[in-house]
Image 1 (cartoon, rainbow, N blue to C red):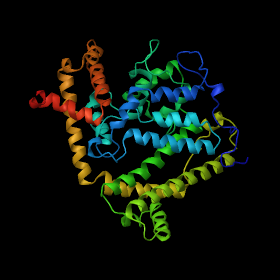
Image 2: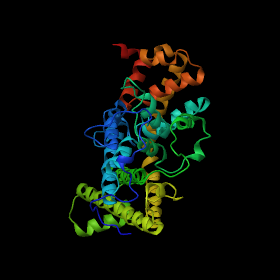
Image 3: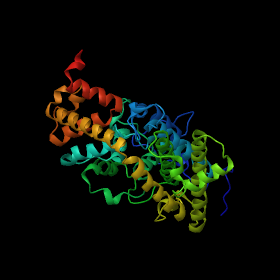
Length: 394
C-alpha cells in the first residue's frame, strides 16, 4: 500500500459521503452539497458557533483582541484538519466539519468555566463539554420546524462523540445519559474508534492549541522566547529560526517558529499515520473503527515531546498568577449566577424560564446550566453585573 502527498482519488479507508449512514430524521439530499458539507454549513450557521467568537481559550475575551478565542481556535483546527485529510486522501469536508463543531459545548471562561459548571452540576448529573457539544447539535439548537438540533449525519455525530477514542468507559457517568439515550435510537457504535477523519480532527486540535498557546503566552509576556530553547519540540525549531535569521525581531521570530512548528507536527502525523495504515493494512472505514487503537497519531517521540511542552505551558502559562486571577473571577461569576437562577428561576429570560417550569430539581439545574454554558465571556460579565450591581440599572 503506497501513500503520496495529496494525490487524486480517495483512500480505501476514507469515509464516502455517498454511502453515509444518514440522519436520524430523514431529509431530501442537497442538490449542491455532499451530506458532510451540508453538516459543515449547518454548524457554521448555528448560533452556538457564532458565540464562540467571545468564548475564551486561555485569556478572558475582554483581555485583548489578539488572543485566540474558541472561534479562531476552531477555524485554525479546521484548516489543519482539512490539510491533513487532503494529504491522506480522506474526506476533507467531514474532517473539517468535526473540527468546526468540536468546541460548541464549551462554556464561557475556558477551563475555569467548565470546572465551575462541573462543581455546580455535581448534585444534578455533572457537566462535560464534549457531552454538551453533542447536546448542542442534537437538542439545544432550535432552528428547524421538524426536529430539534441540527440533524447531522451519523458520521459527524460519531466524530463529535468519539474523536478521542471509544467512550464505553464513560457511559456510566450520569452526564453521559443524553448520549446513551440518543444511542438507543441511532446507534453510534460507542465501543469502537471513530473514523479516520474524526481522528484527524482530534490530532489537529492538539496541533492548533499547543502551537497557539505558545504564541499567545509569548504575546502576553508570561514567558520569553529564550526560555523555550530548552523545551522539547519547540526549542530545536526556535534555534533553527535564530540561526537562519540572527537579526530577526522577536515578533517575526515568534511567528516563524510557530509556523514551522505546525509544519513539523503535521509532518509527523502524516508519516506516523501512513506507517500505521501500511502496517495494519487497513482497507475500509470499518477496518479503522475496529483496529483496536488509533490510526491517526503522533509518533511516540513527538508524543513524548508534546507532553513535556504541555508541562511547560501548565507551569508557565495555565497556572500563571495573572491567569489564576482571571480564573478565580470567572468561577465566582458563574457560581453566583448559577445559584441565583436555581433559587429564583423567574429571573431567567422568558424562553429559558418556560423550559424549566414543570421540571424537577435535576431538570431545572440542567436548563440553568444550558443557559449559562451558552453565554459568551462578555455576556456572562454583563449579565452578572445586571443581576448583582444596582448601579447597572442606570
